Amino acid sequence: MTNGLQTIEHENLSSKVYGALCDAIIKGQFQPGDRLKIRDLAQTLGTSVTPVRDAILRLTHDEALIFLSPRDIRIPMISRARYLEIRTIRLRLESLAAETAARLVTDTDLARLQDLIARNEQALSSGNTALGLELNQAFHFELPAIAQMPVLYGTLRRLWLQMGPLVASAYSAGGRTMIDPHYPLLTALKNRDPAAAAAAIQADILSGGEHILHSSAFSDRE
Amino acid sequence: MTNGLQTIEHENLSSKVYGALCDAIIKGQFQPGDRLKIRDLAQTLGTSVTPVRDAILRLTHDEALIFLSPRDIRIPMISRARYLEIRTIRLRLESLAAETAARLVTDTDLARLQDLIARNEQALSSGNTALGLELNQAFHFELPAIAQMPVLYGTLRRLWLQMGPLVASAYSAGGRTMIDPHYPLLTALKNRDPAAAAAAIQADILSGGEHILHSSAFSDRE
DNA sequence: AGATGAGATATGATGCATCATATTTCGAAA
DNA sequence: TTTCGAAATATGATGCATCATATCTCATCT
Image (cartoon, rainbow over all chains, first blue to last red; front, side, top):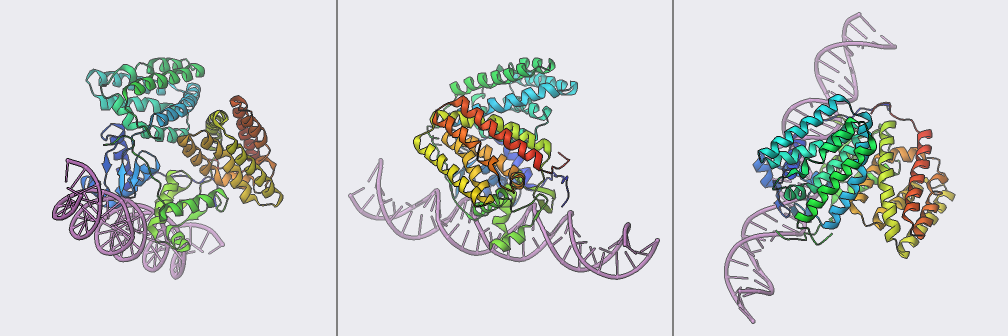
């Protein structure tokens, strides 16, 4: 047994299918309640059932998909309570990412963030909401990456997956809510101010949350 | 598409195998660096390879197992940095669980927690460390359950899985560190005092963390 | 029209064969 | 003894068949 075992990332069909489905979920290509069938997806994607099954099962463990029955896999409609729970968790975790990022951020990091904001402004101008969603999320995920917190990154990624259809639906008309809060956050990071960074990301989450709460039809069930 | 889609839990071979492997990991039946082979496990467990593969893949996505290569699945030795990251995240999340639990806790909940502590005292007296580990963890998981935060529960479960071998190793000699901090937490919950509950769980995590940091050999790598 | 039940069909779980390639073994050379 | 390379073996990924049972369809009855 050796110390310092090194993890590897390898890309196989299953992980490719998983990535494609994650993208589709985040971009709002599925609606809550939509049914996913393994054989249909395998045909569409040109694979056998195994990698699709792998990906689907993974997404159910991510809680981005649910089994309504042992034969019925759906995109879930999350409840208001669940959304609020996720938001509360995010307030705790994204503020941790932001604080830590404020302490570690480099000029290269800042340039990258600036670029994401600029590209999001362009996406907004051209009405490309799917790209806007993607860039908003990419901005958020920069924080745990800059903070060098891989566990936190993975945890947040799964939370965002769960919110995917909700966020895509709430922002289907686009809007500045996905961009404006990023400016004060960027400023705080430039200033290497952890407290300001934490406050900025929390303000982002809360203002975004208000938008989601006002524009979404939630499941009445937990 | 209906509102209020209801998720179901169904138990199949894959989830049974997953549960058995999670148990084994938490109880320290594997050492960091140990190799798991799908066919061997399938033979041991008396299943075909499919459910074992499902369970193994799920554990790799949980980051409780790692692929050293596309053919080599191991129990990871986590790094000091990763442990500290997990601990930081736990400080945030378990305090959230504790605060919320303090607001929602019932007498039935309190009795259950009391029982867990009593059983842990017994396990300590009889030198049953594996049971002590299990009961310590059960106690911790009561908080998100009482708090009615299923997402938080799932998130914490995965963090504990990752720490499984480390915790089992650090506490291989047993000790009061797994019990003593539970008393002030129980008191805070009895008093319905969120701030005290949060402080108590954080103290538990930090004191446990000191024990782990002093007694563990970490991987030098991230 | 709605409800019910039977039969047909579909679905994910499971088993197992095959494949590509990763790993181990073993013999030879240094 | 150690190192190296070739061959043998093993391993997880993938494909696909089969199974158990979930779901859908359709006919009949109220």
